[in-house]
Length: 541
Image (tube, rainbow, N blue to C red; front, top):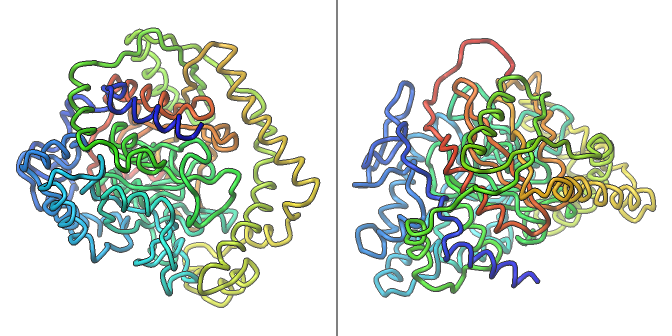
């Protein structure tokens, strides 16, 4: 079944079901050849221009076409991104470290391109990894000083897939320490190793979620794609809040081996990109579907995009409004619904059931699972060997408490019932049942292709004393069920991006990506960040 799903995904890529994944003209993006962000107030100057290429908007198929024609090399592309990291990242603090071998990796890809022997659509494409994904040649810290010593012994499985596909591992991104599973009031985007990551749109605003650095780096065009991880919301919320695309795959589609865990029942890595096509191509590699694929796959996708424009006509989408996120976000959703209807989709309002019960059960279950899974992971690393030792490490190291002092979740997990406990097992079984039914019943009752909801509120101000302001329920049903979700840019509240979160049934990743590409093309909502210092309104949102 897994091979069949992967084959289906590749078929969608090559035959053009993602035709609309290449976004339409973006008037607010930088002009061709700038190689950087829009030249607007507060924006860092572009650097290392690539003639005729706008790093904000270029897609992987376009890059592969240029590399196949000899008009571009991976070395030049990699150098351009490394230079942008040097010049732009000091404003946003999204990249922890770059890989010293990146240019050697790019040179090897250039040699394959000259031989006509490329390894797939990511060959020569620079990729950033969230720093909770094991790399044998770079530190993997989860943002904690406890893991800041020797690198892991082996790569995570997904890193092996990326290397086998010829991707250039560009470096590691900052994140919320321990993927936001340490304190009851954490500050997203902060880690003791990396400090605070900032939202490129307004620098005193938060990038949201634990994949904060990956999202901020993409919004600032510091890599072509990035890999994030999610337990509940940590790919899709940062994507929405920084105006990029984030896909949380179906549970099990991407191997979790070598990823610092919270819960094997919900954790997954997934692709983040500036367009849906790039996210889909990256997922095809992460899931094992693109290594060894025919060399002209990316070119075929680009050509199919011109021949077979996608359509929303006849699609049925359920709109879950979530008015708790505020009137301004609801207005973005109303405009989104109007645009989808204008494109021929049928949009009906829905409210998935069982959400209150899911909220009651999820956190206690995660505590038990975290204790089990983090102990197993720490046993593979130098440093604290289990959760109890990790708690003691934090108590002994004041640098771990410079933004927020708490480690209440660690302490609660330490005394939580084990995963062998009948009460825990009943809780997880009920969670799985209700979360899957919340989606399946809603899809079936209204004959829907997907459920759409706001991904995020406007970014709140970053404040270590207050912590996050992030009660965002839209990600929970898919996260707990293990179903796929996809955030694409929907619009903005003033300067601050808002995403629309699309959720579909189990292992419907390919169909969801195809639908998301059509939605992305129709909304055409992306605009380049302006790196404003503040909005000057003093508000928490």
